[in-house]
Every structure is written in C-alpha cells, then in structure tokens.
Amino acid sequence: MLIVKSHVAQRIREAREYREITQVEMAQHLDVARQTYLDIESGKTEPKVSSLATIADVTGRPLNWFLYGESTRSDIAFTHRDDLNNLLFLFNQLPLSARNLVMDQALLLAEYMVIMKSSDTDA
Image: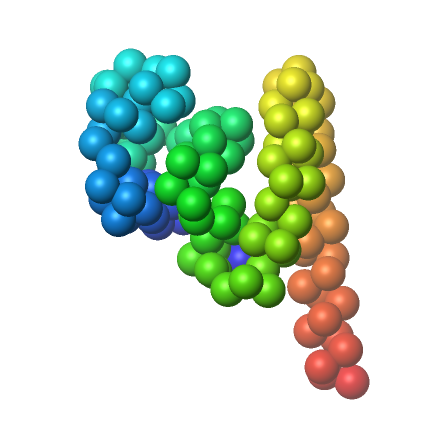
C-alpha cells in the first residue's frame, strides 16, 4: 500500500483540529518551531517517526491511522500502542543509514508478501 504524503498531512491536521489543539500547541508538544509544524501539516515536509508518534499520542489516534487511515480497535497500532511507541523510539535512535536499510528491507518484505498473497489467490 502506498503512503501518500498529502494524506498523512491531512490526517495530522484532522486529528489536531478534532482535539481542538492549535498549531502553536502542537508545535510545542513536538518541541519544534510553529513554521516547522506548519510544513509538516501542509505536507511540505514529512514528519519524523518520533514526531508522528508524539502526534498520535497527543491526539489519541492510532499511529497506523495517520499512515493508512485505519482506526479500528483491532488495528495492531491500537492494541500494541506502547510496544510500537517503544519500537519507534528505538528506531529513531538508529543512524540514518541504518534506518534507511531497515526501511528498504521492510519494503522488500512487504512487496514479497503482496506477491505471495496474489500467487495464493491465483492458484
């Protein structure tokens, strides 16, 4: 599934507005300048994983919802929220080259899973 940057930005704005949090307050939660937060919310820049986790925490939305729009209680992002937040914190501590390697491998695994699932349904 493709993650569209503009959809993530729109969901960030929707979650903030739903909780009646101002842009300035959200920037303070993220410990960034207001303009930096505006760039995230407008889709001009992508949020760091740690920032997205903080936004999820502040707004009470599952992290998965920001990426895919899913929000049911059966979502892994909802049922394992603390574990995922810990994993995201640790991931963010890795050097950029290691994070890129992990993401590349995760994408390859996801592509493989999609191919395997489609070959199962074709058989």
